Length: 139
Image 1 (cartoon, rainbow, N blue to C red):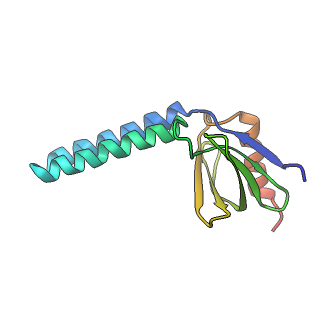
Image 2 (image 1 turned 90 degrees about the vertical axis):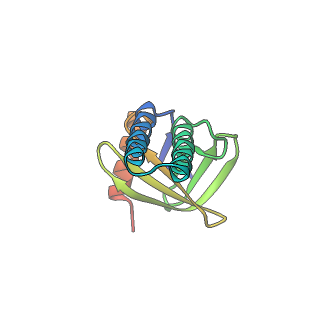
């Protein structure tokens, strides 16, 4: 069965900048409302969260979705950054607009793997194909 749509992810600098800016605003809000040990704990958590979000958006984590193919029956095959291949029994497009596409892939272990796609996250033709499939898919 040949795929309907194939998406190869690229590191998204705009997503990394957006995540960094959001975390910076959160850190500024924390400085205005906390002090002492709670401030240090929240700053540590925010810094770790920012590092994780940037690493995820730049595809530096080996277990993250690196590419996926949508099958005609609504299933998907996806590969991770470490080169592993996986099968998703369900693919769900949670949000689809011209600038943002949010895709959920439910793996064989019933865990969901979510992918946030901005215009610089993949090739334009692949994103267009995914948007068209999400609007016109059967069922």
